[in-house]
Length: 418
Image 1 (cartoon, rainbow, N blue to C red):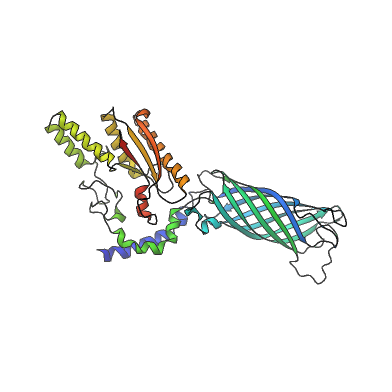
Image 2 (cartoon, helix red, strand yellow):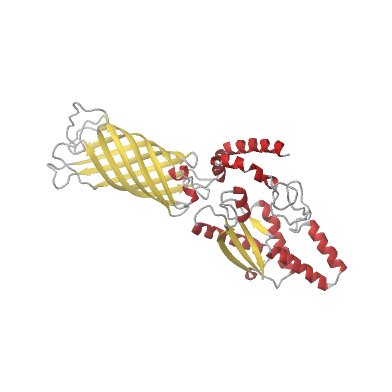
């Protein structure tokens, strides 16, 4: 069987991985407004004896950015620079430059997989072309310049809508007719790119859109799988394992943690025709035993169900970096709702977990949100909030963190009755 299935799996993985970025293209925000201000420094050309301050104020910039995906984008930016003399300058001057650029934007944090160790810090680089106009008190015409722009920056995520940005940019100019201090520029013997201007700025990125995350910070697990395709092919043999011994290989098993011995369908899902969260086989067994025995036997059956819940057989699962349960987890929640309604004196700890991708503090908060959301579903289903206690346990390190299939098992909420 493996000789037939493995080649088909390889083809399926390759097709899925090649389309991963496209399939996640609508899961993140693409637009942002980037603005900032700071210092500028014009290295040349300057009239002999004229000088400007090393930390010359000021520069202001405003940009509009669009990201094609989590790694690459394009940015339209305008900027304004003002130049003045320093204390040792031979003469006074007051000039300014207004310009605009069109730049390619590269999200280095995603290219270098920063998301594997931080959710707050990021790096980026940008390069492009532009035009600008040099004006001044003693310039009787607009000196139009062409620009080649390149720069690098770092940013810190403050919230899902705002990031702090620090940037250093260099502009190489050509066709310049006046010096930065406004005097005539002797270009004799000079080449085209002999004018340089530097910007050192701080500012903010404002993210626009209806999704939770912007492309700067979005984690697309499918893109990670694309980069790990070679390693995943080596795991295909492991995918044929059947962890819960239900007769369905793990890679086809929609519920890889079903109770041992309980009947499942062709996709490994527990058969529950009345959708009450209890496997039909287990429900039939309990009902038959209860009908045949007295109230003491009913109590014993309740203890058996409590052991299943406390033993971790009833769980609620989550997709990567999500805090709302996935569609396959409705049965687990319904199982607990039914039990708590039949046992009104019983309460439960609602315990959230996350996998090991990302930093510890972020995963601690994610596990807490998962537990809170499951509690809200239980309360909305008729369970008193006072009977439920939330616990955010953070990362579960019991599985191989390099296996995306193993990580599915630990992204969960489990329960302890009390």
